[in-house]
Length: 350
Image (cartoon, rainbow, N blue to C red):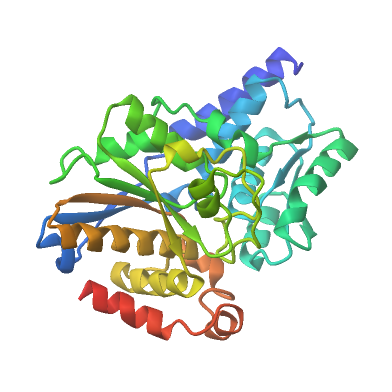
């Protein structure tokens, strides 16, 4: 058990950090092609957290969960398996508590994310593929006598889904004065599945008519698992950083997801570009994946003559991906030509 004085100080530091932080903005997307029929689209901008992404919320919850369970002690090495953003945020909180941090991640992780982890005092341990991160993280935790945070198992249970200013409660509070205050759809991606689980539980608990849609990139296993219920399924893994997984993660609760939308890589990157132009600022590729699903749902609603609101997340800023997803040569070599996909999206918006 951690000593009471150190535990109390650790929790107090995290709570003080939270108290210093403002809520993230809700951005309305002005899309005349849909607004004329009463379909409104919104993005909750999670890139404004201190560590620049949606994962800041998850890291805070995981640290508090580990502390209150007695898993973290003074001097503990914190270890995480992460493709980047969660590790950036966990490195921030580890430094806040004066704890060493090791991130186990694929070598394909963007250099910008690696630099951010190191900026916050973390160490990056690179492995060949996404499937290797789990056992390597466990091994490092065992070698150091530290704690493996295991976001893929604990993401869905570390957050208080009933409220306490979680992301779902924040969404509905900010939507209260909009034309359609209760969203018809909330769209999220899934890496751990923790966000879709939190939102899915919250809307049921609050008895909202909102449905949850997960935008799943090519190469991810979640869509097939949602369809079949077979937790033994595997997949190659996603090329959209931060979302999609090669195996079914414990935190992805399929019964809380009403709809899956499969998104091709070229569509994710094209939507990232189109949305960046609409907003006048760069967004990350997982936000592009979300935007494809938002437009898919909006198009279906328009075809059926329905009105309502669709809400999703701006997960992180595009500056993290300048050498990769914003590099035309890299995209063409890795994913193919996105020009026709970009034309289709612009035509849909017109």
